[in-house]
Length: 134
Image (cartoon, rainbow, N blue to C red; front, side, top):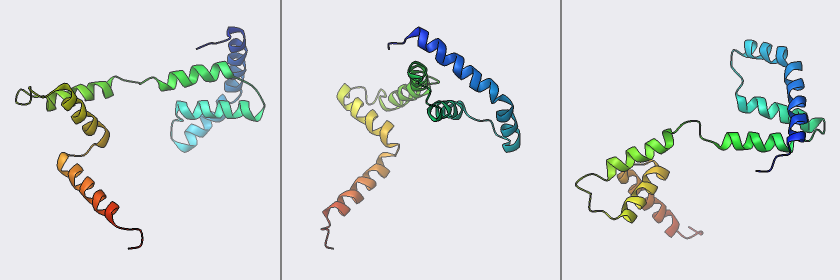
């Protein structure tokens, strides 16, 4: 990721000025609504202000995009390992890696029990066999 440090400094100074000038307004809004405004919403407001005022912030946007694409926890990875350990038991230890991979792909992406998945696929096939004129 290429960042121009001089431009980034200017962008951060402008962001700081905006945040400081709107600090009281945001605090009142959070108190009135009795909710905490998410960090995503705060960034959206900042970049919305920049867009309205024709302020370019390409370096700051790159950094924020990068930060938000990082997972907050390792929970999704731990979940995959847990599911894999549950599926690849001693009784199923002779399964090939490709079978385990297929099983995990279905289990993680579908989120349904195998019986429910079978029913869903069966119903989908039944609907796709009907002609459009029926």
